[in-house]
Length: 162
Image 1 (cartoon, rainbow, N blue to C red):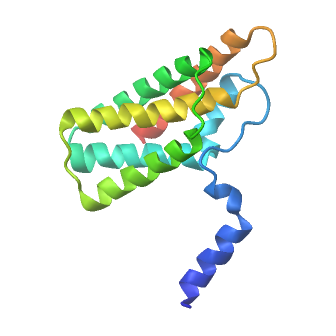
Image 2: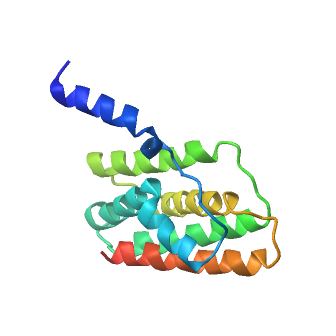
Image 3: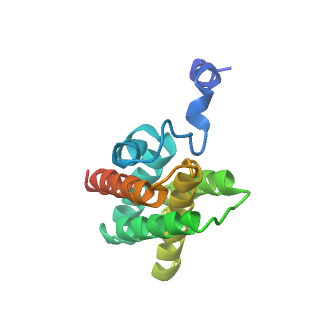
């Protein structure tokens, strides 16, 4: 086996939590919790990077992909607040990251509407997952969730700008 393959095998064996599609959240919902998630959740950071690359290199419209992705996230959060639950959500998040990476690698040109639809669906997966990991059992949950969402969107927007 090549040394590089051996290195990656042991790296991911030791740090298997990096491979989780959507790591759990520590603490209750709040602005800082939402703001820190895109910076600490590898899935979120990677999908933001891939949405930006796809928008620039494949769609040639740098601002449209991130805007649609964030709109999908908002939709996913509101679905989550209405108690929508998808059993295969983690798989959907993993597929979103892999599909975006594959589309960029292949420079796959999809119809603009299909591209934006996929961006919105991928964003909805991430937004829905964000809400599903929050603690629903305290007073003021809706307010704190909206505060959490505003932090999540602000950090996502900042990463998209970068």
